[in-house]
Length: 176
Image (cartoon, rainbow, N blue to C red; front, top):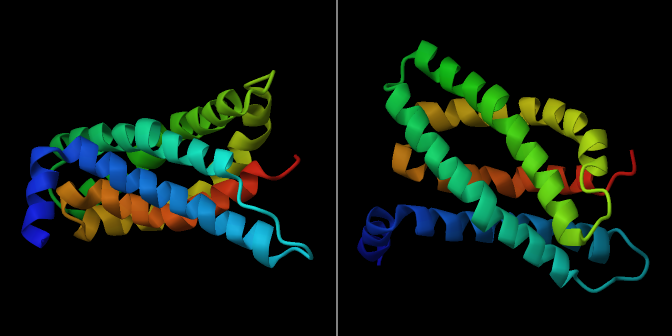
C-alpha cells in the first residue's frame, strides 16, 4: 500500500498534494466547527456544510497548488540545509508568500460567501492574522526546511494547517 501511495505521489504530485491538503484544510474547519458548534454552546448546532465546502475548495484549488509550485521553486533556488539557506527560505516563505495567500484566503472566502464588499474583511483582518502567522509558521517552517524531504513539504504544511486553520477560522469569525 505504501508503495502504491508513493507511486501515486511521484506520478501525480500536484493532484495528490492538493487532495491531501484539501482534506486536511477541511478537517481543520471541521474541528473548529466541532468546538464552536457542538462543544462550546448550550444548544449544539448542525455543521455548516457550506463552510466545509468553501474551506475544502480553497484548500484544494488555491492553497495547495500555490504551495506546491512555491516549494518546488524555493527548493531549486535555495538548495541544501545550511542554516543560512533555511533562514532565507523561512523569511521568503513568511514575508513573500504568506501575505498574498492571506489576502487570497479572505477575498476567496468573501467571494464564495457572496459578500457584497469582498475586500472589507480582508482589510480588517489580514494584519492581525499575518502577525499571528509569524509566530506559528516561522518555527513550523524551520522544521520543514531542516528535516522534511521536498516531496513531502505540502503534506507537512497541510498537517501543520490542521492547527493553523483553526487559528485562521478563529480570525475569520472575529468582528474586528
